Length: 120
Image (cartoon, rainbow, N blue to C red; front, side):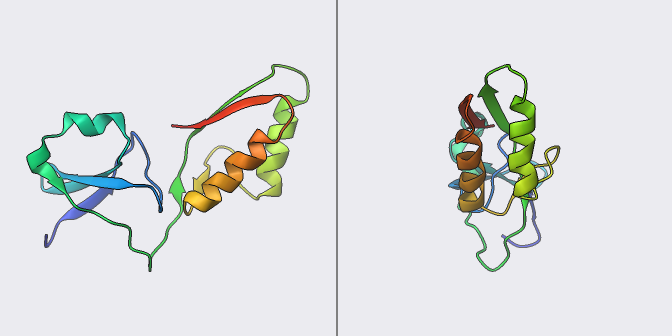
């Protein structure tokens, strides 16, 4: 499709390596969602377009994580140390792809007192 704007969905924030699906909006914009995004079901199949990642251009994309952990002294310090050691901005977590995100999640999961790390 020529001369069309491509945007990433804010609801699922796809990053390079995610399975993705695109939908053409009424305004001729392709919105790219993660294939497992709950909002995908809201789109009509006739608006669906094949999309894939450009492996030559990989830009950091925002990632939102939910961490379930003990509510005890020192927990926030342990979490922020992981982000600091990885040189990640805690208030604006970004990842260039799935492998980097998995590394971040794995490091958080290794902290004593962390029960679960979920990606929004």
